[in-house]
Image (tube, rainbow, N blue to C red):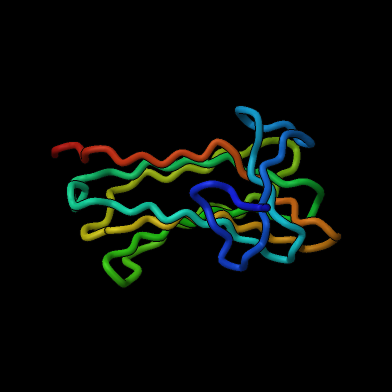
Length: 146
C-alpha cells in the first residue's frame, strides 16, 4: 500500500522499499520514491525534555541516484512547540556510480521538541524519480562538557 512504518508522505505518494538495481548500501532494502517530479518522505521524532540544551545530534544517510538527472537530498528541521528553530540541509547528491554518505554533527538547538527528517527526491527528466536513500541513522548524545 506504499506505507513505510514510522514514515509518511506529505503529498500522499507511495514510497517503496527496493531490494536491488542498484544493490542496497547496507541490509536488504532502501527507500525508493514514486514516479513524480518531486517526492518527500518524512519522519517526525518527538523529544522529551531531557534533551533540552544538553544534547548533540549525530545524523548520517547514504544517498544515490540512477541515471544522469535526478537527485537526492535530506533535511533536518528542529522545531520547538510550534516554530521552526533551525534547519540542516545535506548536499544535493547527484552521483549514480556509488552510495554517498552525508552527515550532520551539531548541538541540538535549545527548546527543540521535534526533529523532522525529510527525504527529498527530484526527477528532472524521464519517467522515474530515482533518488534513493539507505542506512539512515539519527542519535542524540549528551553534549560534552567544556
